[in-house]
Amino acid sequence: MAVPTAFLAPVLLFCGLGPCLAAAHGPTGVECVLFNEEYMTCKWGSRETLTANYSLYYWYETRLPMLECKHYLWDLGVSVGCHFNKSEIIQFQPFHVLLNASVNGQTLEIRSKRMELQDLVKPGAPVNLTIRNMSSNQLQLTWSSPYPKAQCLEHAVKYKSNKDTSWIEHGVKGDIFSFPSVDYEKYYTFYVRSKINGYCGSTQLWSEWSVPVVWGRNTTSKGLAEEQLQRFWIHTVLVPIASCLLLLVLVVLLVRMERVWVILMPRIPNPSKNFDELFITHNGNFQEWAGVPKDMLESFKPNYSESICHVSELPSKESHEPQWDGSNRPPGGPGTPAGPREHSPYQNNYVGV
Image (tube, rainbow, N blue to C red; front, side, top):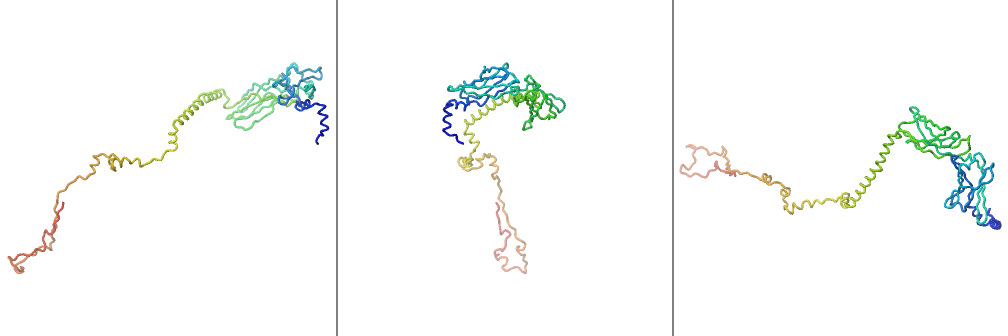
């Protein structure tokens, strides 16, 4: 439902515009944390959310009067919290806080609700994590806590192997955690954190996680030394050398870009240029162009001679002249000239060369 303007006007006039705006952007409450029972901080905002410097007053129900904070926490000139030394802290006593500020002559006050300091304790992170081999497949993880009352703590252990994708967390009442089964082919990482148990307080403020401790194939001193040596060589020697080589290669490529382009995109050869010498210099003489020795060329020339041989054809027996006797001699007599011979033993002559 909309607020009538007639109702807002008197309120603004009564409060004053400045104080109301300051209250609108002021702190909404005070959050106090008791760190390891050594010191306590109470914060009420940050520089971005505060428009005025607030003063903090505190008191215990059984102890009066009200006291002002002695050690303010500042953020670029704006008070954002208060620091309490150990001598100013009293546990198991109801604790009250009052914030006030002056804006345009008006006083703004913010009272906190009652606080029990034993419920605001945040212990320190566990230290000295140690892993021992108890049997062939069992490990024992132990640690110590900087919190002065170890009996008031409960702990949580989380671990993961190099083959796991998520963390496994277990609650532990004491300061010993037994890991029943391990795989010697893996290596494990362990963390521990602590908080006040239900016997000494009611809080959900866990400590920070401890520094991790690891166990497995790569956690022996020799393995760690080798791993550190490898990292040294990689980061100190190999990486600079590889960088210099890469830079040198880039420089060479830039200087000889044409040669690189020829390697990447080779030109198509022109075979006609290979025969220019054959037709221009040697006039098409292939043997001379090919460099065949002269004595070899002479060996291929014909080198022979033959004498002339005359060949004649002998007549056959049927063509021989018949024999004549006295009774059947042909006319003409001995004085008669003989006619031309019909056949001659040397009628066809052939001359062979």
